[in-house]
Length: 276
Image 1 (tube, one colour):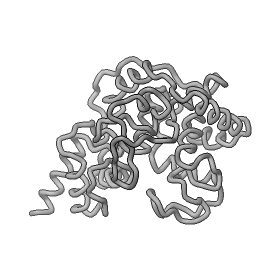
Image 2 (image 1 turned 60 degrees about the vertical axis):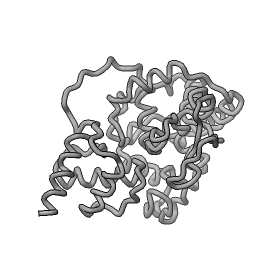
Image 3 (image 1 turned 120 degrees about the vertical axis):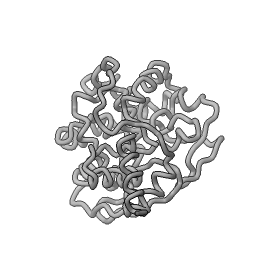
Image 4 (image 1 turned 180 degrees about the vertical axis):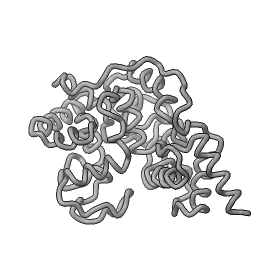
């Protein structure tokens, strides 16, 4: 299941420290393209309103929609009509800006806070935005790391070739967000993110990130409790996160869309209450 940022922060910092770009000419080309949009102010209003860095908006939008501003950052569907891919049924919107604000607030990115966007947080929110399914296969997600040694030179390597369909030996042809974002910052240091923060001491706040049950159990349980329908595929993606958030809201828990110990316990209690 999805883990908290605190549980993964050290991992991200370690990967960032040893990351090397493997597809330099492609990274340079895409970064140059995105910097044109930065200079045109295409991301400015959304960044200012939500406190999300322009490098996150630019690179995630490139992954989702190849920076086609007729498409939504949420899933690459047209924003002037209801979306048909996950998240489905979003829109129509009056503008790309409205679609972007909906996409990023749907995933709670405006709650991070401008001063909390370190490079590790960039990695976490990017992986959470796309889903944690690659971890089930022991592969660092190409959404972040494609175009670098972390993904391109890894063994094993693989890719989701369809909804819930993972295939080893297939490489993601798209560039990941990290290499491109770093290249953008090299061109304009004002886009850089905050320095890493000291390792936080556990404070007991929030719902935690324990994995007492697996994601398939979570999905089946939420279906049984009326928070679906969810595909019981064991992948902690956007639809599952939205259902977890809805359950947390209903039960008066902190709404972080992460099924940690408190949420897990509340689901178990709800299942027991339903069964009588």
